[in-house]
Picture 1 (cartoon, rainbow, N blue to C red):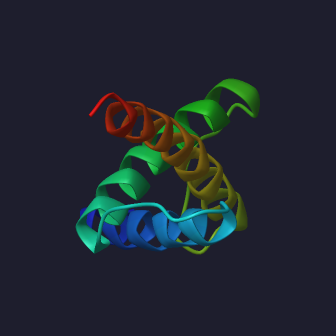
Picture 2 (picture 1 turned 30 degrees about the vertical axis):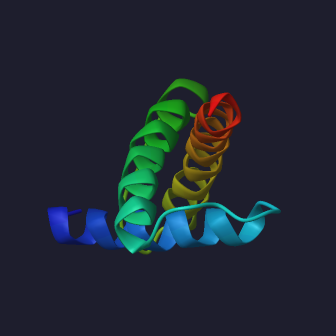
Amino acid sequence: MGILGFLILGLIAGAIAKAILPGRQGGGWVVTLVLGVVGAILGGWIGSLVFGGGLAEFFDIRTWLLAILGSVIVLLVYGAITNRSHRRV
């Protein structure tokens, strides 16, 4: 998968992760892209540890599920960090 495909995968996976999680998450599409790409990397790493294979082809369902799972995890961590910093102010 090329870099453009990976960026598109990250953007869509981040948007799906934001739709899955309840509540209002901050950030625009750039934050969604960054969180989605980091989530896709994390999901690929988790997939390589658990299933013996990470992200494969762009249209592979396993690739999308791993990217979305990783994006949900990254979004939960991001939400915990940003909510904690808002409470201190």
